[in-house]
Length: 214
Image: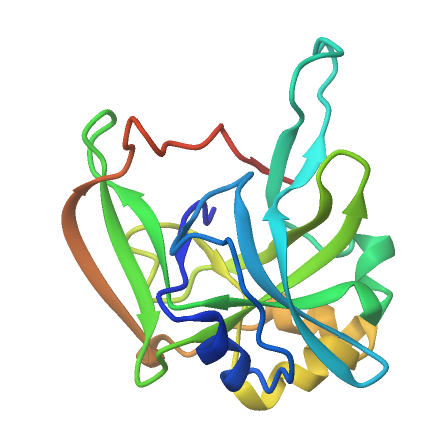
């Protein structure tokens, strides 16, 4: 799963890359965790917007108390199943998630560190996502996952569905079969860079709630 990513560019820089005409003032932090705000690119009637949304679809589990907060479902395992298929069939609910790097936990339990992945020669890139309006948190989004390529397999068996710039339009406007094809393909491993760090995965002040993958 992907439970932490960064956007280390200004909203104006992100808007320029994604050809968004309305750079916004964003409250999204550089490090994005499940259940916190992130920047998302949507498109309606040919006009792209850069919006702030909560990362994760709210889900109430059986047995949860009425006053308990929902759990954020921030990763999409299969577009053709469950809560996702209805949205994935409708292009208006697809989005682009701007990313400058994403992290996976590596190492012994309790001492896991952050291993970062980014794309060569791309200061910002897109993760394929879905979004909707929720009663609990307003606009929310989740990112589509796929099998890890050779560059990421040493750390994790799953990775985000990453898009090349010339694929943005196809993800946003393509058929349902097009969307499924993106989830089934292997992203070129030679385009991925990896950086292992000594930075602890869980930070007491910023550690998010346990995320969910559906």
